[in-house]
Length: 250
Length: 385
Ligand SMILES: Nc1ncnc2c1ncn2[C@@H]1O[C@H](COP(=O)(O)OP(=O)(O)O)[C@@H](O)[C@H]1O
Ligand SMILES: [Mg+2]
Image (cartoon, rainbow over all chains, first blue to last red; front, side, top):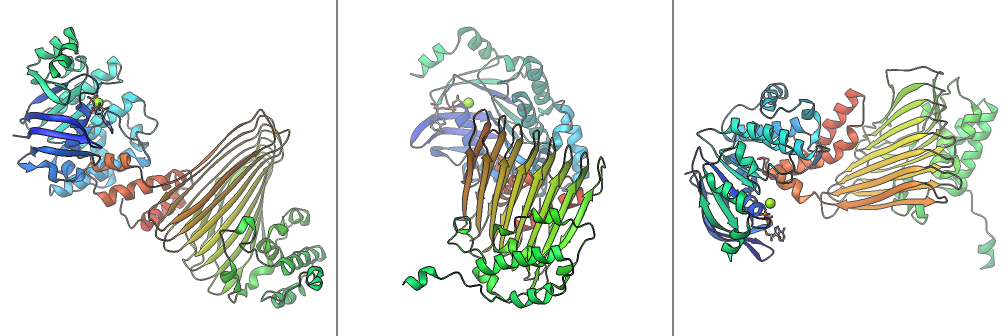
């Protein structure tokens, strides 16, 4: 078992957003979490990543045998949790390669692996960048600064490629992408999909799932999973819209 | 009481009086002697600036100036290329420091000939020894169509007293890049003024890095005297311990169609104190002015403090101006982003602070200098990045 979320209640500023959420992810599985805007998808992603503004009021989250909720965000990351942000943050003055090498080395150190110097890391980065067809000119640029929406999303997947997480949570990685960029990002994720990792695809739309075929689909509404099924559930949602789901949540 | 009212300010005897008498006796250039005497008279009359003056209200130099300083014997070095008319343009009456500089100045002239591109930067390093007062005065004339880089480094490795002046003339179509790095020892005092005249379609690109010293102040004044001029007047002050730095900047759009960009950043730790005062004047008739100014400060400690005052004074319409200042801590969302990539909290904070400072340092194109400053910033953060 990679991730087990049980009866999770969480919120912000005293407002409950997740209201008893359950989710189990095993190694090698891809789970899609779908749901209307405001259903709590990003909240779930941020709670799993350890965002300090969100408060977990009850429930448990077990990751790789550990109590995830006890770990700081950076510890979670070094243990192998990765979240691709719906809105990636710009970090002025820090180059992409500098940032990624630091992150890579922190993880390497944690795993007792060899840390890389800038030259060695650059070789690794060049290889990884091919996965998302990213031009090496982006290595020198400040993290996400002045990147287009699509470039930011690609950069998130590049980070995933470098950090090789056990669990990747991709929050609306498809939003704001044109069809070519969507294909590139999706193919990148497919290349990173292995029998050893788990992926949670958070998305509003079904179209991403044409490219990354999920093993399970969970429909979130009102902070709870209201329906679960296989990949065909996504098509059903596409056809019927979310209204019936919202009704079900009430 | 009446007696007090009519009393003129006494010309006071200071520790600089005797050294001046000794030096001026050996000044054989009559014009220069007159200039120096006039400047010293101004100093003797007005003394050093005190916090009673609006422009000096946050920076108190009284302790530093009352210590015993030995006037550097280098003071009288005279450059043969020195032109008295250029010296007359220097506003020695700005304050007691500028007056004292003119009185004791060791002049140095750099002239970049017409239509000449100089690839190697001109590097001037100034350093005062313990208890020594130095008065470097540099004049840079970038003649029409020339292109060059000036690097000024202030690096006293002990408690010295630096009082410098730099006059810069960027003539028609010339392009001058200016890096000013102040990395004095932590117990040094440093006052410096930079006066810049930007001519027709000329470009002046300044980056001022302030890292060292106990009490330091830099006054910079950039004046556009013909159309089409452009200036970048950027800087960084990175302070810790009880350091105090003050930048007072004036950008004066006297003529139409000039562009100025100003970005100053401050990183303040411990009980350090920063002052930024930036005036941008857009004079009557200066149509088509484009001026942008910002001052952003990062406070790393609750006891650090910054007083920032960006000011725009516009006596004109048809101009594009923007200014602003911020004082704050690191952005929580940026910090969270770095944490989710596995960087431990202190490293993530250091990286963000480094990035904040790097935005200014990255402007520097002299590679060796940039690397050195990079390292200095990291050292300041006690970080290995
Ligand atoms: N920082 C916040 N402060 C207050 N309410 C929030 C905050 N973040 C999210 N919410 C609320 O929580 C609910 C779920 O939001 P979110 O998790 O972003 O949904 P989704 O990602 O599914 O669109 C929404 O009603 C939203 O308004
Ligand atoms: Mg969302």
